Image 1 (cartoon, one colour):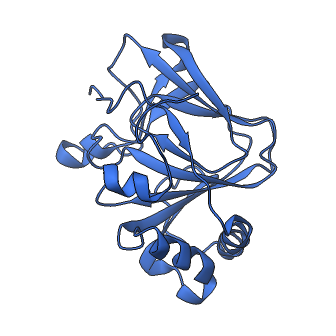
Image 2 (image 1 turned 180 degrees about the vertical axis):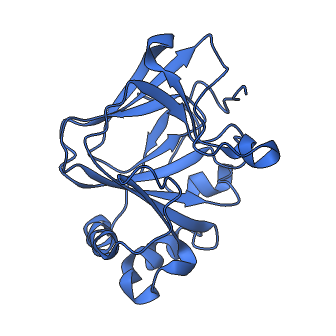
Length: 208
């Protein structure tokens, strides 16, 4: 199946979060409980936790911040990643960019000198979807392309919160096995006004 990029010249934007340390600590607690639904059952390093599975008492500062930027109603899951994750492949989070094209990534621990890199390719046919399911569900699958078929076009160190374009080929670059980040996913997807509420002055524009 072929994938579709949305806003192909935008890769990431920095996000300033006033109570960042409090949010990071809450995400560490949630991560330590390890009782979530894991999409990628063959991969112990990536864990999805849905909003309805989280006890609101575990994340009051996070909830307060999401309410303050008008995004609590769109927040529907978090993705926790903990690993040395430089893979020989790059990926998009879904074939269907209307289903998932942005991720708010927040570093938790051991993120210095680790990066998210972005890529372009002339081979839009991706392989190895996480689920072998046919039809519409497959169109929403996370999928890979061998890195030798892609060219790096941008890279950012994962030491600050960033809003990432997950419809563009990308991968983490890390040799630190303790590296831990939290990704907030939203549905329906973020629109221009939502991104402005995050404090991003030039939404969906690459500025550095």
